[in-house]
Length: 314
Image (tube, rainbow, N blue to C red; front, side, top):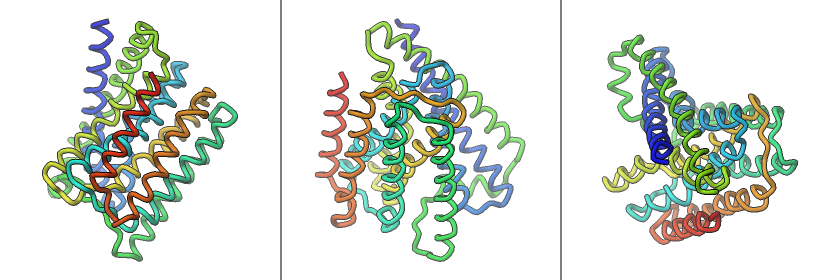
């Protein structure tokens, strides 16, 4: 059992480190190719931060463990809003941009609703995965074009991007990218194998392990970043970032995984977990609209919802 726990922990570490190196290398290469910060932020960085979920889900599906693949995405989406956002705004209330309400939240709801409809036949087929992925590409193109017309679009600065673009060593960035990919590959392998063994040892379903332990682990980077920013009272932390992560989780992680390997979905996921995910997304809207700020009361409610959901699983 000690070995399995060690595998999970080292898998988490490799995933987090691999994701960091992947983003750093990809941003450097994209900047060297003279892509704008806007394009880099909306594509390279967003994709990179969803890389741990993507690699874990691909690996799980290929190993015949669809419960972990599905649980990882649902659990991450629930954790991003109910846990990460809840804890963050308890420390420091978070302002909400107009575009998070106009564009990000509706897209998250569309992605979540489509996933629910596609899941009703207890599987995510290749064509359904392609629909999700294609819609996301269209959404990104829309955001990029819209931002050129509307200067009020609020974009988060990529941390350290100035230092990266001032003097870029392309071979160094390629090395970072390769290190990141290697870390993600081995990290996902160790994490899935360790979690599978722990689930069997404790008599827990792979679905529960995927939706709790693995989902929490792949959400740790977002939680750490948001909490540190909240403690420092930095106002550039964004509700839109967390919503965007949820959009990418469904449309990229599940979309690409479904294209590579159709995923089986259990009935209890439709009857229970997806309803929680949809409900939490719906509850977020009035919290965002009222006073255009997610405050401490909303944070307490979200955190209570997360604890209740995890308790219900066990």
